[in-house]
Length: 122
Image (cartoon, rainbow, N blue to C red):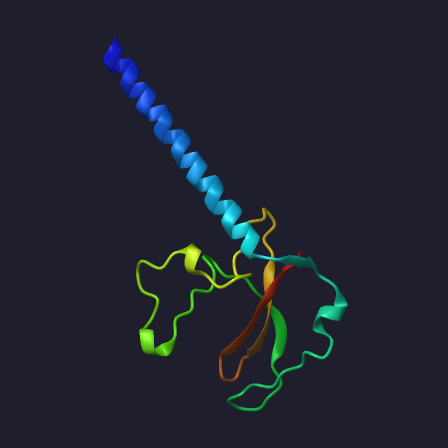
């Protein structure tokens, strides 16, 4: 009887600890990400040309899965164990209707320019 109670207690404590860690992670991530409402003024003066071919880039949106995890060229690629805690600010949306980043795409060169100053709410 005591063994069953102690294992149940350990299981409950483990679940509570997992919940606390998850809530802490969500809180930490939400403080690093700013989302603003979509409005026409966001795009004003933001017509860019492709740095490779000089053609006008198409305006649009990009949604990043576990965020944009960037690494300087000299350090190599982020690797297998990269996690969302390493993502650039404003590249992860934890909202139920996820926000997205403003982006510009050159279909000819297949280059994508992402503005991660803020996330834009749908």
